[in-house]
Length: 104
Image (cartoon, rainbow, N blue to C red; front, side, top):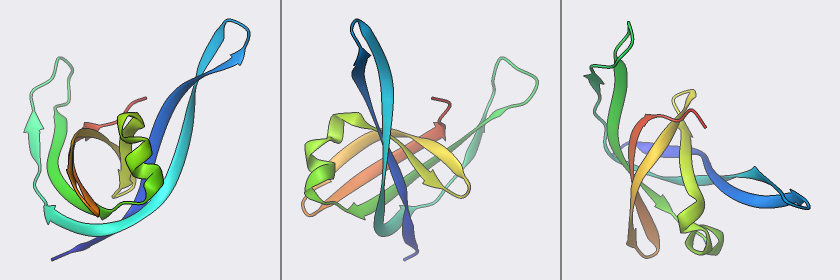
């Protein structure tokens, strides 16, 4: 089984000034296993097709990850940021299903 080591981005909206909310990104390092490694091309509205990797990664989670599940947005892997589509909780691990490129 292939191994994973990389950053996961947590995106949270915080008030930076009175009445002004901005997205604050926190990146943390995690390790784990790659459970499925596949990719496909999606027909898009543009000239080039979009890539969808549909991978599943299992990470060893810490308390920060459990406390901030709803803020997990992307995973940095293979020199790109990929959207996290779903999270399956299997303590002490989190199973992340990853989709297309994150453009946040």
